[in-house]
Image 1: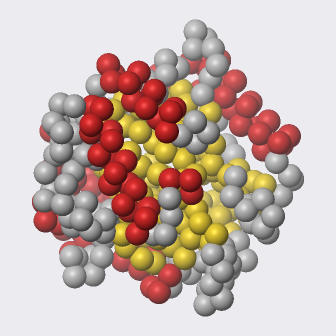
Image 2: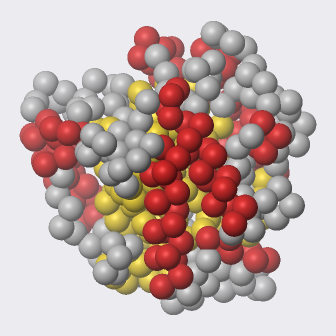
Length: 362
């Protein structure tokens, strides 16, 4: 938990069933009961559940057991947890908020000075990955406009899930580049922190699905983009359009969003092909460089999501992570990265206390 003594504490948590022999229905039921217990028993009444992302092994059959009736943001994706369970969840809570669901499906999390705007499960059912991505971003931009919000100025983070990523990733990349150019998101301006990863919707015809986070009231001077110079190169140099990381500064804290980070060097090349141990170490080197640039360290991390291409690498990676971060909420998922040679990708978020009277508190 960040900010135990502040007026707006935040908590990230990972939930995993303890009995993986139960049916999917029972595992999901027990997991939801545990989440409810956390927010009703362990935290004060002013702490509210904001976000739940469910990771499922078989979304087509298991989605029916997910309760989507609450006020919180719900995201559901087929990315099998590699601990043997049928479901895991990443949850996020904030103190002293209001939550409203818009007609567009967006969820507005309201604090005194800022609105945190979440869109999830954005998808289109027809066309190839290029056409679906174009439709998704077009509808997202239209929804942002209804909140007097712009993609280029206010969108902080996206997650793009691509089914059969080895085949369909290029279509998503090309469509995103086209949309970004139209919205003045270019190498000369900036892009958006993002993870582009294998994932599957509960609709079989969906090739691409997106979750997104924006802050309508955020000012341009409150957002900084991380480069990882010396370790990483600008993504546009190898044909993609996202930021390595983004820092959002408030009066009392900074949120540091680290995009999906793999074993890559400052020339855009895969480092340590076919070696999961060394690729894991290099991925953390790159993440460490980004955190350091933001004035943070690994001790500031709030959570980690770890994506693997090969289920056989789970035990080795899990042992490495447990030794390195024994108390950090994290989950390891089966989700191939956008290049076959990348065996692992890692994303996360750090939170750092600051005192900056130029900006309003979170």
